[in-house]
Length: 233
Image (cartoon, rainbow, N blue to C red; front, side, top):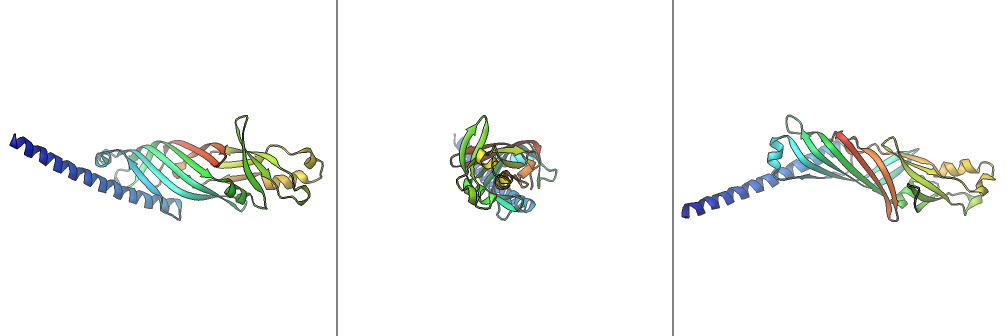
């Protein structure tokens, strides 16, 4: 019995040391991955990276990680000189393969991502005193209310739709213009110059493709996904 107790104590001690070493190793790997993502994506701030699954060391030995999550914080998309700030950008990479030298991530079997932005930033990106607010959903489309800045038509409001184009662009288009604008020569062109925009998101990690945009009262959610994607770092 005494020998068994000693053996159990030794197992517990070595088990604790292994867990401690495993956690130190995963924390170091997360810091290294975050630095590489920051440099490869040209980010001004180091992202937060979390490597999931236990134990980490056995995953590394097999050159395969269960999941790597990256929170990149805020980024900017540009269109016609107007910057659109994305409040939050995060991604989750599953079944991640490491390079043969174990120093970098080679690819991920699947990945999902989400970006969030608010109406104040969307309004700022539109420029020219235009105001954009929530307008709900209609026929499966995410809509916003757009108030152009036109001195002669100060009460003009139009409904616009947000869609995804080409897997990397958020498109805003006025659905239609009221009769009072159509009756004024040149009105439609002036309104659409303020309402119709494309914002390209070229900082998506791992070449994720945008899939869906949803408007909500507190902001806009944009989802992304990909297969066999590359993860910077």
